[in-house]
Image: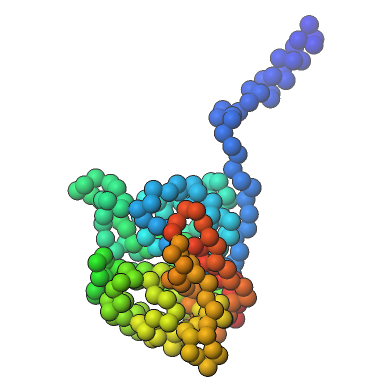
Length: 273
């Protein structure tokens, strides 16, 4: 009788042998965000990829800041939640929508989802500016700028997506607008999909202001010779950049192929001193 009573008391204290929802995979252990790491990624739209997979790709590198292009607000909301719940990575978010598009982002036909850029940052963001270029080309394009913390220091971060690759004159006008914005900041990090190879003439105003995080990547014909730039797209072109201005230097960098987009992830580990 005493044994039965003890068993009953233990059952009440311990509760059910399996928690509700047993059988679902546990979240990955929480990991630390890398405080000096920035990334850029065109996540591809419309591509119908899982936001769980997109979040897992970002979590592999756990950047302090990541700029996303071709991003629907609903997708970024889900990516951010998966980063928190599945990977223990908590981010602030700012959106830079340039249009509402049902075919890209879903939603009701009379209220389609917002589409454009987004920035995720482990630190709060302030002084947010979202601007459309005067001429977007075949689709509205723009840039999203914030001030946040990278490597323990305040820095201006700008995320952009320029006009399609066959629209060079349009991109030239967009880069003139962007370069004027970048030139106003002594220190800046410019992320994005520029749809331009390093030698493209329209990129010259930006090369005059900033350097790629890969010190070997620059336009050919410079004093240091032909640049060596990794390709960042499935069609083997360099379109995605991390530009650095104002003494910010890269301690490391990388281009990482992914099956979840037609653009690779590009990261840089920075010294912002």
